[in-house]
Image (cartoon, rainbow, N blue to C red):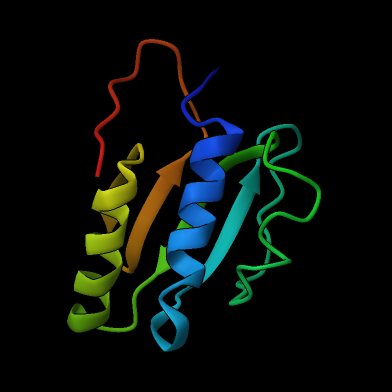
Length: 105
């Protein structure tokens, strides 16, 4: 696997989602070293950066409905992060498999 994000991009994502205030979505992460998937969390300011970003394989961002999805996507496009739309929101990649193509939101 190779890194697709750096600390600067993670902070930009964190700040963009935090700035959505009442529209700030829930998120969960997967650890690249042990495969642990966190519980859903809605606190972007402290919890998201707790422990740093180096072990985040991906972060899933949950959209409550189509309007919420649109608000989130607008911010993700501003930050321009590697990821994809999912059935429930978005997945942003911190690491990707060697040779795997990555799309940017």
